[in-house]
Amino acid sequence: MSFNPQEQLKIISNNGTPFREMINPHLPDKSGLNVLTFTTIQLNIGKRCNQSCRHCHVGASPARSEMMDRKTMDLCLQLIATCPEIDTVDITGGAPEMNPHFTYLVKECKKLGRKVIDRCNLTILEKPGYEYLYDFLAENAVEILASLPYFRKSYTDRQRGAGVFDKSITALTKLNARGFGSRYILNLIYNPVGAFLSPPQKQLEREFKENLQRHYNIQFNNLLCINNMPLDGFLRSLMYAGKLEEYMELLRNSFNPNTLVGLMCRHQMSVSYDGYVYDCDFNQMLDLKVASVPHISSFDYKRFLSRRIRTANHCYGCTAGAGST
Image (cartoon, rainbow, N blue to C red):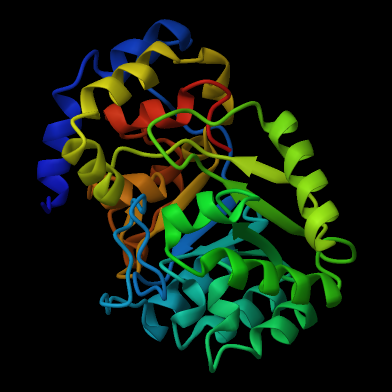
């Protein structure tokens, strides 16, 4: 079962109250989400990944070949250099480290004085040929946002594949030895294994810290929680299990208007591997481009800031419960 972006959008749009109708009563002008700040640029620099996770909204896998090229990367760097408001460059994928220009991008961003976040799946650090990343990330004081579905092996391997937990623990141990979790920022990111919402973030963070410290002597800074998005791999698994309507109803019924001010789409822009501009990484997967500034090569600062953010029913995933960080 496979769906293109238009088919995915149609499937999720046919489930319940449109997201815009839900949020408008909670917005000052009742006309959709507007931009609040522009502090972060998120770059999806490729869909190739050493893992193939069933929940992945990107559909990343070892079989994917899409990668951001140097020309597109330089256009992004040019924008970063000319926009002092951008203080953070959030690099994601796939496994972003598999892009051959990854180290170039990190070094150039650091030269510009920006904070760099690497969304790392941890196991890539243990893949032959990528071991140098441990020292590279430390030398450049890159903030790591590492995926770890749970502090128990069975849960993690069920979501990400056999052996993923053990490799992740090895990677975390080596990162700790290089100062991550103390001198450098090491945050973990949690998302549920199944069709349910993330528990309260602070409570789960305490459990993660206690268990990882007790059993593996691992330390980290913060745990961030996200809800699974009904897109791509997770959408397929929901439909296969006959749970799509149930999950969409859960997201709608858990809508929390207090999450609206902190939504990432109101504070960032997201750029795909081929240079197209989106409100967020999730909109990338549905091909919901920013209409007024569709490509990084024709970026216009004023038009970007004055835009209305494009939404659909997948956005319930960011506003359900405590929301998605």
